Image 1: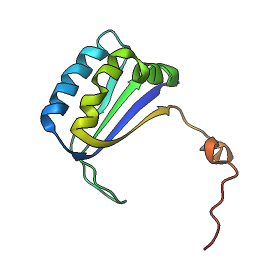
Image 2: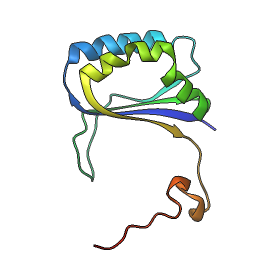
Image 3: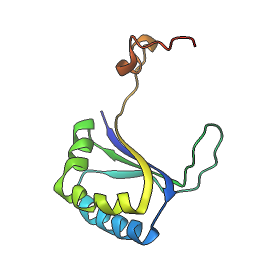
Length: 116
């Protein structure tokens, strides 16, 4: 199953640092089995809260491959530029589909919000 790296940009702090990060990211991804799925395109907010300036979604052959790239020396070397350039959220995501509703979001099983 595919794995993904998701970056949601909430606020741009230093665009020059981001341009340097993006150039470094292209080099870091050379030779990787990855693909841009969503790459800084138009956003039309439909619902929800919080600022979103951009979204970047990269596909890898597996969850482990996505996490491995994020933890690689090549990515870690350019990560400070991303941190300088934007306020963002990032996550490694496991692809695929959980067909049985009771098995979806396994990390939340047993979690219940108590009424105030």
